[in-house]
Image 1 (cartoon, helix red, strand yellow):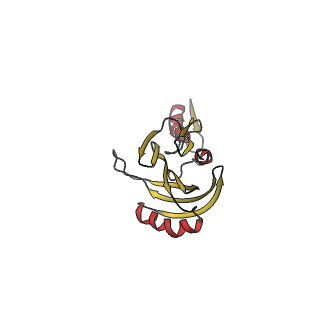
Image 2 (cartoon, helix red, strand yellow; image 1 turned 135 degrees about the vertical axis):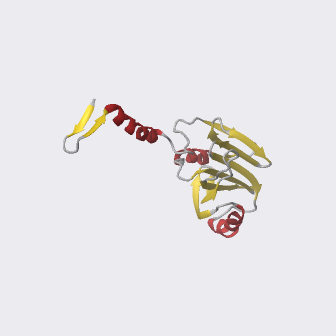
Image 3 (cartoon, one colour; image 1 turned 90 degrees about the horizontal axis):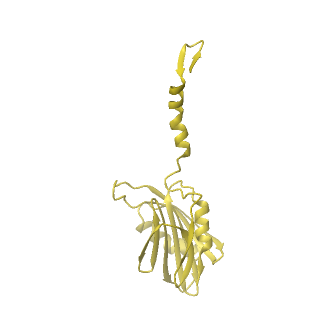
Length: 183
C-alpha cells in the first residue's frame, strides 16, 4: 500500500510507515529500570525480632544485624540496633542527617517527616544517593531512597528502600513498610 500526499509528492509505503512507528510502540511498553512489576508476588520474611512482607525471589544477604534483599536495581534492607529513645524528626535531623551526608555517596535533597504505620510511629527520611558501582559496567545511577525508623522498647529497626531515580515503586514500598511488625 502506498500513501500519496498530493501537494508534496511524498510517497510512503506501509512497511516503512509501520517500521517507523514500531520503536515508539515498543518503548511505550518498556518499564523504567527499577520499577517493581505490578504482578510481583510477595512473601513474609520472619526473624526473631520482626517480620515484613518482601518481594518473592529477591536475593537475601545477612551481615550482622542487617538483612538486605535485592533484585536488579532495587534493594530493601532492615538493620536492627538498640536505642534508649524513639527517633523524632528533630533528633534525626540533628544527629543522623550529618552522618548520612558524610557517609553516603551523592547524598542530597533530604526531607524528614513522621508518619504512622501499623507497627507504630516512624520517622521517614527521603533522599537521593549515588548507587553502588555496577561490577560489569562500572556505572552508577542516582537512587531514590526511603529510610523508615521504627522504635519499640529500646529497639530500633531501620528499613531502607532504594531504586533508580524516577522508578514507580510507591505501591510496593507501601506494601513492605505497612507490613512491618515487631515480634
